[in-house]
Amino acid sequence: MDWFAASDYWLTRLVLQRALAGVYLVAFVSAALQFRALIGERGLTPVPRFVRRVPFRAFPSLFQWRYSDWLFASVSWGGAALSAAVVAGAADAVPLWASMLMWALLWLAYLSIVNVGQIWYSFGWESLLLEAGFLAVFLGNDETDPPVLVLWLLRWLAFRLEFGAGLIKWRGDRCWRELTCLDHHHETQPMPGPLSRFFHRLPKPLHRVEVAANHVAQLVVPFGLLMPQPVATFAAAVVIVTQLWLVLSGNFSWLNWLTIVIALAAVDSSLVAGTPTPSPAAAPLWYVVLVCAVAALVIALSFWPVRNMISRGQQMNASFNSLHLVNTYGAFGSVTRVRHEIVVEGTDEEEPGERTVWREYDFRGKPGDVSRMPRQFAPYHLRLDWQMWFAALSPAYAAGWFEPFVTRLLEGDRDTLRLLRRNPFPGGPPTHVRALLYRYRFTTREERRETGDWWHRTLVREFMPPVPAATHEERSDR
Image (cartoon, rainbow, N blue to C red; front, side, top):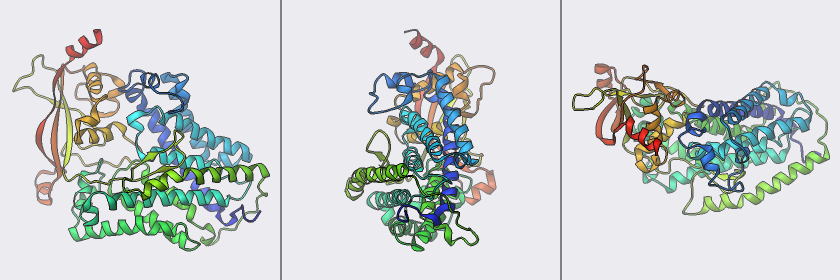
């Protein structure tokens, strides 16, 4: 079936699948290491409480039937182990049906996690991983050539991802049209990386070039992904280079790496010298029928994201079905001009006063200590740190989880403290915790030379007044 098989893309499939399994591995490990404090039985937003409020059809998940921290850990670490096996080539060492089962288990396990993850899993890259992971189920293995239809579905996903992101910027904040957004964005993005200060300090004309290049990469180049070869390969190369630039300039979890992986579907591996094409067996009929059915499903479900893209009220990062199959994407339709950070502090004094010494809790990724260089964490996702960025934009983003977070600090909860870089009270929990809102900015070259600091901060206001441990004990008694 020449119309069905893309024999020249065997290397493309090999690299794409192994890389996608690597992203799955990071996602499952991230879930396993952070879930107890965030959504566990004693988490900030517990899964058992959530599933009691929502129907299965709206949030299908294994954990709708039964939840325990042990079960969640088993699913997370089991998914990580299976991902690692696929990275090592296990899916190519088994029959086609078994390979598809492996990919399906990865998708089902991560879908079960995302659909009970609540605010902590509300990011576009969660749905993106599920959509790409679903298509990977039907990409086959070494037993057969890659299906042309699935490669085109992945190209269609790459197009929607990039073009949707470009549209949301062009329609959103006017600074994108004025080419001035990057005067602020490198400094105010959710989690700066070690090179973000360097990018922020680039001359403003270079920032204009960056924004203009972004518009070309997201509004023009995506059409090349849908063109014949070698145009599609060149378009994919532009997408990959653009994403690597974003990797260097910030921490966006696995969004950029996953975009690179998906763009690989447009790369014709026969253009790579010295890669002879293997001759696998013809695809079995049941596989051909299944792939055609999936293609028809994706085409039908594409109605909603296409309607969203052409709408003036375009949404960012929306899923139109509970299985996250065909979604819409976009990021940073608006850019903040000023960076605010919540600094959480505690004291062990019985009655805080004007001379009280407050000790600061250090987070792993978000800015806190002004002398600490921003770290590179992506593709790993620090979920609490990201939500702290949103909470600094508005207290409404912290509703439902910030007070429980303070409660856990007052209790000295080990799972919560593991999410932080440093616990300033190793001998026992504090008596009071408070939160202050600061304005942060990168230091100038002169300030950096003089103080050695990466950040300069100015107190804006109190975010949460001092909360005594007794208050939370009394609430627990009630």
